[in-house]
Length: 196
Image 1 (cartoon, rainbow, N blue to C red):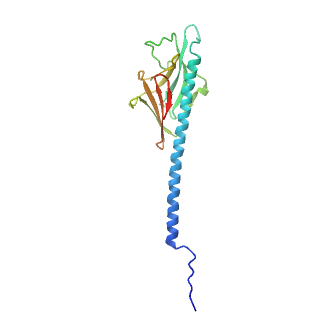
Image 2 (cartoon, rainbow, N blue to C red):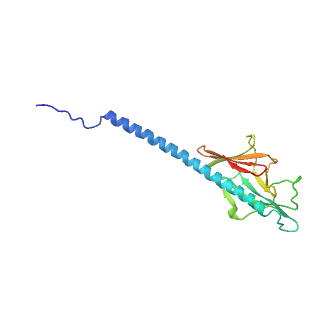
């Protein structure tokens, strides 16, 4: 009688190798999926912020000469960033002043300035870990509640804050998600907005 061995299956070692490779590939997919999700959140917030900045520029152009009363004019529109609250918030406001003469005038959010309608108040996603404002050389600007103001007719952009940061030629916002994904929104003093 002949004994015939049947070799139709996989050995235990082969099965363990296939399972371990599957586990490694699955782990890589999950990790890269999470990083991609964080990057999408950052890009979404970047697009939203650019849209709000462009809205403020558009309002500044539209309302440039229009006077609201005998004592005050709308000199521009700005965005006030509230960094001391989580999630970070930012609001569009009207910059009002008796005269819109740009020489020697402090551009900042004042008590007399009006925050616009509630739908002009925005907040960053709660998955955003930090919002850092830097000058054109990369130095961090320590600012409590920074404001960016667009003034017409040239649509110059000025950044100021509660603790007295002066006007800067170029500045940018670095949006960082909890997972480390970053995005940048740049603004120069001519009011040009770009992203990275």
